[in-house]
Image (cartoon, rainbow, N blue to C red; front, side):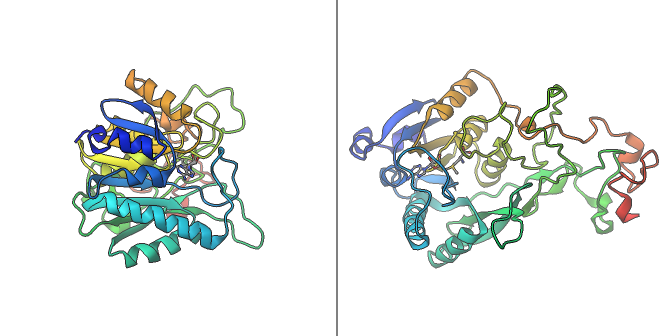
Length: 341
Ligand SMILES: C[S@@+](CC[C@H](N)C(=O)[O-])C[C@H]1O[C@@H](n2cnc3c(N)ncnc32)[C@H](O)[C@@H]1O
């Protein structure tokens, strides 16, 4: 079902929504998420991804209050979460990204709504800073619920991690290595971007010609920090994360929805993976529109370079690649496999 057929243009206008982009696959509005969700019919969408402002006092565009009292923030969240549930088809997937502090509240609410808890996915956030008397936060939560039993759950695989120095495999998989699927390992609920795999070139690196493009997209989720890849000043997620979510929770030809469009990462990923999409953004929609226009012209982004150069060798030596912990040429003090020997 093409998404424009789901929305009456008159209703959209009456809700103060302004259409800013339309392609064969999707439609983007500028306007408030609740007004947008109100014009979507019940049980019409296959997958929803929501990445709301985290209430951290960030400086978004006009119309966004990112510093509300906790109960106000939660009351507002319950409103849009309820609407997201309403528009989901039975069996549809709901993913919500936020700080653990809010995810725990969202989870409690979703459990009361007869949503089916699937996972709390931990997305590792390297270099997050501790605030006050706190530990250093190392992950954000990605809640994964379905409306009843999942209608779609596609298994996704991540490549087997290898030492960047010698190409030897880092983990022993409890002795089950030989039985692993050659495509890689099943995606786990910790989505990691370990420091030792990525070299942060966010500040300045004039030598960034060696971007390593990976054949498999399930390696990790680098934060989008580098100005070369940032679509806008405020938050945005790496396309790899949305591609993974959409690939897991929907099939081509189904409809994805994002009520907090931002730089358009969800729409970009959906369009690339041939899902229809619908979304809104209250603030500046220009970065999303630019990005979707480029994609329509065939320009696919190098997400892998969002954080920096990948340190893994482009071509690990074959002899060490298949053998556990045999990193014969590796310097003992730098080999990632050393602790396991
Ligand atoms: C965390 S960002 C989302 C980033 C997005 N996932 C991306 O990858 O670019 C949250 C976005 O929600 C938008 N926003 C905040 N309140 C909104 C509302 N009431 N309706 C629609 N969008 C809103 C903000 O302007 C901001 O762009």
